[in-house]
Length: 468
Ligand code: GDP
Image 1 (cartoon, rainbow, N blue to C red):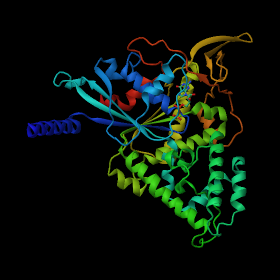
Image 2 (cartoon, protein in one colour):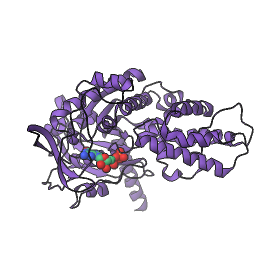
Image 3 (cartoon, rainbow, N blue to C red):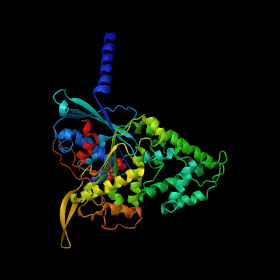
Image 4 (cartoon, rainbow, N blue to C red):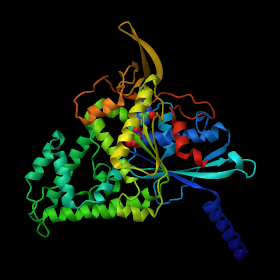
């Protein structure tokens, strides 16, 4: 009996592998964006709305009634943390809704869809299963790709020149200048410098700068405190003596590239088929022209990572594979009345065009959209000094009180907006946009209904619709 059991199991396993490999296509969807862009909320709402699809008419296969079932499955990558869907969903849709914990590292989840084929195949074949592997990872880690092309010296030179005039960097620059980089390594000095540089990176990011690599300095995960994240840029002066602070910093920088950046690209990035990049464009617009210009730069850098032939290491890794579609989605569009969405979309499109030009990008199909993964507001009209204003209403995050809010108009002309951003203008040429944070509201979902969103179904259609 033992042998027979073994044989049947063998056949089953073989059968699984065959169906897995040949008949059940897998789409790996990467979800990225810088911290607080909205990755966690996006993935949670996307999964909930794929499981309960009443709010997904824009996903064609759903609109055509071809999605027969959707269910979560154990993911194939058994050593990767699972995206904590249930906890995040409970946070968003429980009786006292609150925003979930944000992304801090890579995680994954597999959602499988049983779909009846459409088009000319519909009458000929039965339903098949398509697996959607959703991979969540910090955009900060993606920007580390640029480090691979640079030696420690080049990196120091570039970083120090770039941050020279930034007030957030003053304290670090002072400490770096006061350090004798040729002196023998003292661990306490290395740690102080790395901490100082990390403090600067955090402050810069809060001020709206996006060029905040090394990415693991901001989100170290289990590397916190290890030597690979204990280095910092120091002014160059010739070849450093052996065992000096500078020589050790250079060694750690190389180790960071080798042990942290490369494995991330090899294990996660290289296997992605479709990518969504979430950007908090409203936050950047609120912060002003410099933040928008910086965001455009970050978008170009992110696109650059997806450009075939961008980097010898990546080219070898990808072996001709490439990401087929990239969506840049401005999140949190529920902060705006829908009459303003056209402008937000136009701004995103202009930013994407500029980023494509700068990254000299060709290859994947790209698209820009304005979405809200979880709608926290409702639309309203209010009367302000005798004028009717379109506004949104929701529960404010800091006070918990209901408030109607008119954020002001977004700049109408994206070209002028970009010109102002490029020119380093202090303020926008037209319009004044104010920001506000809302808490998620209490939901009374009917059976079959996922959480309310804005254009999440269109985003899903662009990203995976053609594979269903
Ligand atoms: P992550 O760091 O990219 O994982 O970002 P999160 O998904 O944690 O989102 C960061 C914050 O943005 C949340 O705590 C919310 O305050 C806000 N947010 C994200 N998505 C939405 C949305 O669709 N609507 C609104 N109003 N706020 C959102």
